Image (cartoon, rainbow, N blue to C red; front, side):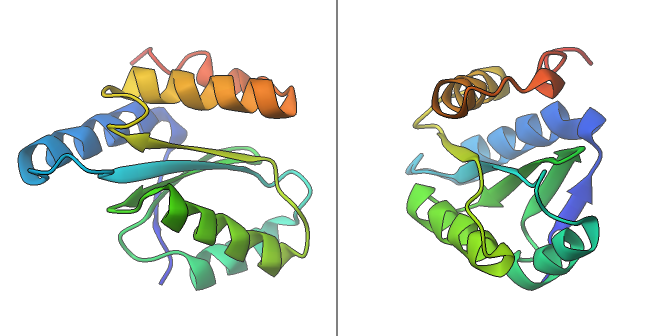
Amino acid sequence: MAGIHFGFDNFRQLLDLSIGLAERLDENRAESFTLLYCDFSSVEASVIKSSLEQILRNSDAIVHNGSDYFFLLPYTDKYGARIVKDMFEEFFARDLNNSMVSYPVDGESSRALVEELANNISATYKKDLKCLEDFNLY
């Protein structure tokens, strides 16, 4: 178990690919995947690496920009993503700023999902994710 790492510059393409796969393969259009954001700014890098190896599945995708971590969890609803977030909090023994959105419930495009995620973070934690400002650029 470890998750697959993608560069932040491929974040949009990863979301677009996941949406395309869901449209092709998920006839029910249920919560095909959930995008979980966690702020790991209060956690040491070596501890983060260890947590990713122990908590995430091989099918999960990881994208990060500094301490802002985004996890694409396929065939996982918000309940399941909350369990993953709780596992991180237990591993780190601290609460984390976090947010989550699910496809297609919270948006049917990568842009809509990222905007909803950023709005949730800004409203809840009063934190602007500057790294997402250039999300729509290729």
